[in-house]
Length: 220
Ligand code: CO
Image (spheres, helix red, strand yellow):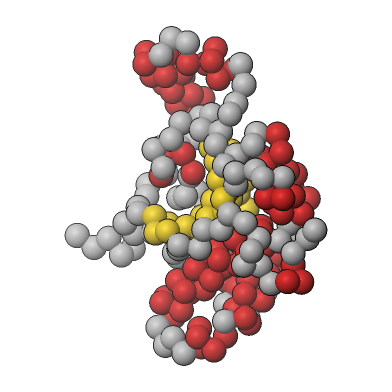
């Protein structure tokens, strides 16, 4: 079977089918635990903040086998972390200072359309300004990236660099550095998800203090 050009069939999905699907979800959840929604309605205490790509194929809960209430989620195109993004800063602040999450996980994915687009010279519209951040990541690693002949391989490496950059950027926020200064247990991690296997690779760039930050980024 040629799977190369086949994509997941979404023709059965409609506005109405989502509402039907919701009923099935409620039924199943209540069958497992009649108190399920009552308990969730009482509050949340997720130990993890997930910052991932908006791509429909990378849903935080499903790919980590977790449930509602277990992961606080922020997603944008290509899991970019920039300090002028009030949306990201608000999510991070709430997650760190109110929910007291113990882990922030930046999850990129191979085959990321945003990352691939950032490697071209084409204009795509408003999004070009967002993707420019990834072009900066390319610039920082241009020597290694330019040396990779295979286009897919080069894009995959940029996906990894982009995740690592987002991890670095998160650690440079006053939110994360203040949490560390106050002795809060908080680790930042970088992961990459494979659309082809469904498996996550840990980039092994976990960081839980600002010791390794360049001096100029350390906030006192
Ligand atoms: Co993506």
